[in-house]
Length: 174
Image (tube, rainbow, N blue to C red):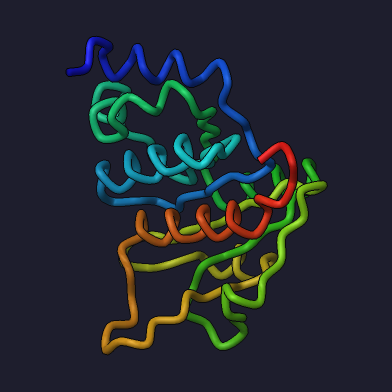
């Protein structure tokens, strides 16, 4: 039987948690649950930031949707994709957009570097990643051999973060 609350367990683990040079950017999400699930994945996988391009749910909704993990990830709000792209340039980050696009390379073929900040962009649930972000990104796709071809945005963020962690875990700090 657990004797600690979820917040107490998070706070306890936060003292030994590792922050990795990886972030997720979300673009104009329509569903606050999807925002919360991406924030939760970012907190679980040790992401440094979640970039929110567009609107951000109110704190109470975000806390509920992220199961309280929003307090353990730094959220950076950008009003427009151009503001986000300026942040990426100013911080020397490597940008990857997850999108079904003719220029996309398979996630299996992507290698990440721990000496540069990696940012994964997950697009809007209906419209995907904006063109100006695609033009400034390495576009990656997640192979899907089944009849479906499109995952939920929060699921994509989970896969990208897990792939990053699995490919960089040889680092003694991970």
